[in-house]
Length: 468
Image (tube, rainbow, N blue to C red; front, side, top):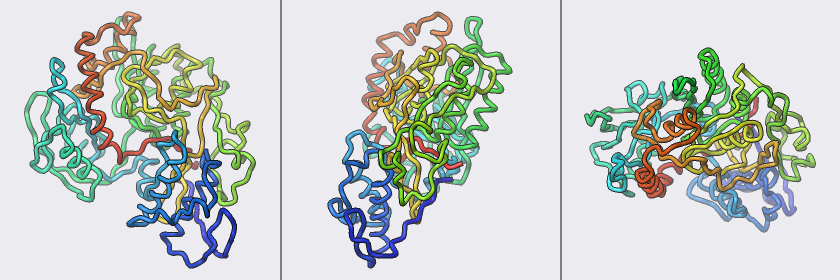
C-alpha cells in the first residue's frame, strides 16, 4: 500500500511557504497540499518558488483532480528533465502498485502486418493480455488485430486513436471488439471491464538453440509482492531446466516497484555480485538534512535516514543461476524500473539490448495520499555502482530490431527474439530479418509513434518505493 499522508491547516501561518487563510475550500487545500508536499520531497525542490510566488490556487481546474494535476504540471514545468510527476486517484494508485485493476485486460499497438510493404499496412495489434482478465479468459491473444470496436472500423488515424482512448480509459464498462486472428479469420467478442489481479510474468519457456538452453521470460510490470512470487516461480523453473542463457523481454514494461526490481536483479546477477553495491538512492538536500516536517512517515528505505550513505542497496544473490550475460528485449515503452535493472546489472555482467531505445527515466517516486488522490512528485534518483545515473535519453540497443507484435510470445521468428537467439547460437546478431526489410519495419515503427504515444498517455510510467 502507498504511504498515506494527511495535511490539515488548523491555524494561520503567514510565511513564504504556507497559506495564510483558514477559509479555503477543500479543492484549494488539495492544491496547497500538492504544492507543500512537492516543496518538501521533490528531487529538484530548490527550483520551486515560495508559496506566495508560486500561488498554487491560480491553477484551479474544473474538478479537484484537474486542479491537483494543474499544480503538478506547473511544478513539472520547472524542470526540463521531469516528464514524469503526476497526480491520480487512490484507486488508480493502488492498481499501479498491486496489479489489482478494473479494465479489459489487454492493450494495443500500431504496427505493420506486411513486411514487404510495412508503410502501407498499419493495424492495431494486441500487444499483451492478462490471464485473469475478461480478455484473457475469452482467449484473446497477442498478435490479434483489433479490427473494429462497437462495429466501427479502425484505421491508423486520430479518429481511431480517440476511439481506443475512450474505450480503454473512458467510463464505459463494456465494448464489442472484432478481432482478426493470424489465420485471417474474424471473431467478435464482447468484453467487460472487470476486477482482476494482473500477472507480471506473461510467458516463460526454455528454447534450445545450438546446444544451449535459453530461458525466455516476458515480464510486463514490476508490481509488488505478487510479482516477486511470480519471479521466484519462473526462476525455479529455469533452474530446474538447467538454462545457461537468459532472455528477459521488457518491451512493454513501464516500471513499478524498486523492491521487485531488487528481486529480479538478485535472480539474474552472477554469484560474484553478491554483497556488492547494486545502486544508491539520492534525494534533495532538504530530505538528506532531515528537514521534512510534513512527511511524518517515510517509505521503507533501508534506514530511517534519507542520507545517501545509508540508502545503498546491495546484491543478495538469489537462486543458483550464475550467468555471465543477459539479453534484454526493449522498446520505447521500457522505462524506469526496467531501466534501473539494466543499469544495475551492467557493471557485473555482459548486458545485451535488442529492440529500440528505452524510455529514459532514471528517477522515481514515493506516493503520497491526500484525501481521495495520490501525488507522485519525482522524489529520488538512482545511481548504480559505476556512478551511472542520468540516462534521460534512454539506453540505445546493441541490435536494432522491430517489435514483432504480429507474433505470439515465444515465436522464434519475432525479430527481437530471433536476434537474441542468433547471438546465442553464432556470437553475432546476424541479419534477421534481411536488412532492407528491417529498415522498412523500423521506419514504420517510428512513423506510428505519435498516435501510439497518444493512446499510451493514460498509462503509468515510472518506479516507486513502496512501503513494506
